[in-house]
Length: 420
Ligand code: FE2
Image: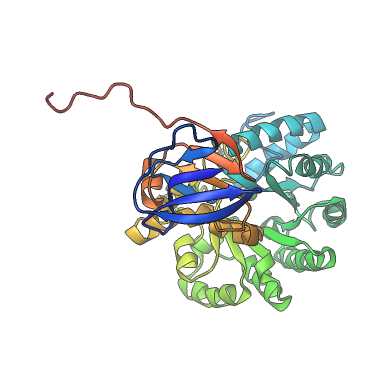
């Protein structure tokens, strides 16, 4: 396969990219746009659009996707009512139900250029039905999409009956990542202990870590410092992710300045879910209302790895969502006040390269000779244009094969503003 007339990120020229044996081959600079050769088999004309590494969804709950309103809607819009509504839905879970919703959601994500997903799966269920179903799906879908499974103790590790045993059983079954939720544990002491347990489990089973950490507006919720210091002491920061960290929005600036020193030294990654957090947080404020989103811009400027995620699609916590990470990025740039030229012109990293680091897949990710031929074609010449246009992903190529393709949006009748 040959892709011609493609733009690449952070480059001003046009390129043609060869794909052989499921890998990227030679990447050659073009002097100008080239016509598509007649009768050329297996040549794709990118028409000057941006060829980019695939989108990654680094934080979603596929086990809960598409269950909003079942059996009841989250009326208050709070995270905690979401957990209550989900606890009512959990006893209704069956393998067939989970499979059907997961496959529909994965399909939606793939149609929007996603090729790797980290999904949290609730382990506070004595049957572990969802966890087992996702481990089977990961294997079945491995040629189509990369699926990472987090053993996520939604109702606590130490506060849920047998929670510690269930999370360990999930790791024995095959979860890739150890999760946690320290701000939901009954006490500060239990929350801190749970962070130590999570790191110990990751070491015991040689797994990654991704904690729902301080997902609350409480400025005294400071489990992030425990997670980061435990990761630092265990020398495994590059394998640890702190998700949400919305309390950081409300931290005192002097404390945050001290905290950033630790975060940087620890080398941990961050996932922020801006559409979800701005919806769920600030719910106990009157006015002014906090945005309740972690300090994405400041983390990014400090050289700490941070990426953006969707979190939910039509579930008890979030009643919208459509699989489009460009929408999440657009919202995130507004909410985090990252609207300067420099911010926007490199912002696709927040849903691509930075997410690959979070998932630990960066060695086999990106458009470079010898790497697996996974890429997407976006409408626009560069990050700035792609984000401003907000158009659908045009093409998705995985292991050298086109897995999704769509026609660019076409305007059929133009409003007559200018005289003919
Ligand atoms: Fe989450």
